[in-house]
Image 1 (cartoon, rainbow, N blue to C red):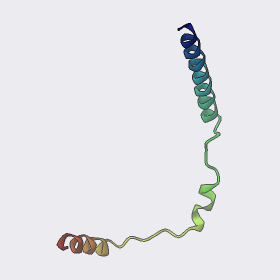
Image 2: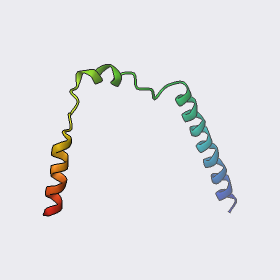
Image 3: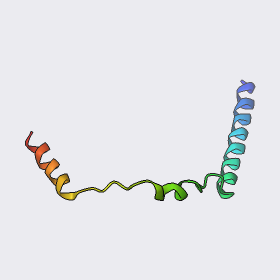
Image 4: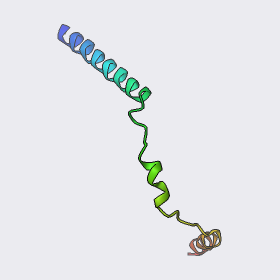
Length: 63
């Protein structure tokens, strides 16, 4: 039974260690995306026509 307590303590310490590393990496900017904003202007935005959207709704409601 004492082995369970030891394993529980070790797993808690490991989880806390990885959580601290995660927080540290987020604060250092590890997950900041610096690539996507520079290429976003190269892609065309899809234009949504509001009239065709409302026509789709009415046609879907009648079927």
